[in-house]
Image (cartoon, rainbow, N blue to C red; front, side, top):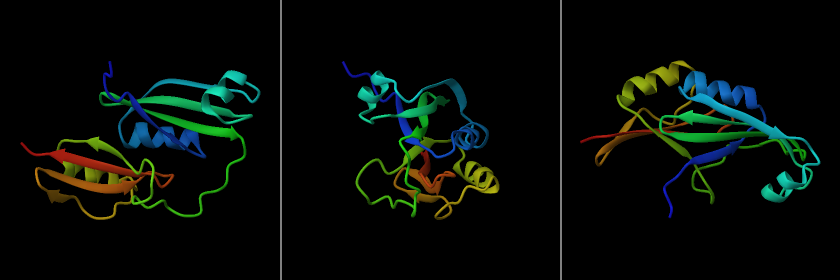
Length: 144
């Protein structure tokens, strides 16, 4: 039986920076860290990435988790553009907040770039910003 979403995962070129952003800026906590060395057959088989090696962490944010990976192998191509949200695949992660205006101001003051100020929609207020790697991070506040 499916219980629900446990975590989302992102890959980063700088694990320490990513952890700092999602813990110090967003407010999560490191639940555990892990990784594997190049030449770990089970990891290569599981991920479908030959000769993989990585450092990773599971971050607890509210009642869910965000898994972050920094692969040292295979060699990564540098990101050349910010991925627009209309492209296929997972296009953003969303955090439910209370008092979206103060969270927006806090994160904006911490250097998070946002597309706009928070905007009201039917039953909610939301805003899109980006983490240090350019991943889209949404804040949403639902209204009763």
